[in-house]
Length: 122
Image (tube, rainbow, N blue to C red; front, top):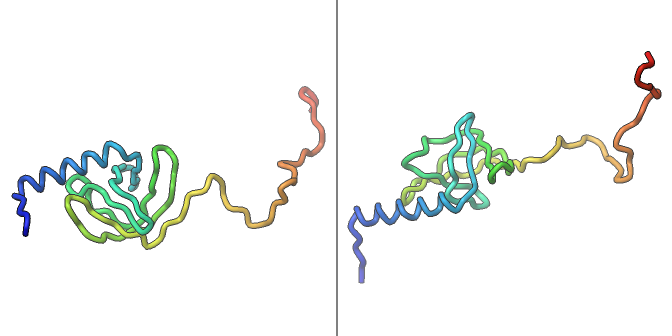
């Protein structure tokens, strides 16, 4: 048995599903100065609303609220049910600080003090 759903009903269902995903999701994709809500995120890509988000490509940043998750190189994959899906060519996790190019011992001092100077002496 085959179920037929009129196009107008299917479009309304897709729109309601997308609106629900936008409301419950804090994920955002930043492209330059523009910010767009992410509908879904999976290990190899993400999706955005096809109708309102322009075609994305190249280097983008993914955020969860204000927390920077990763910097990604993306390519368009496919449009499906009102979503535009993108695949990661590269996804680099964001770090709080720059990586060190040397080993730092866990008990190493945070900084070294030089000559002792007092305020007012010159």
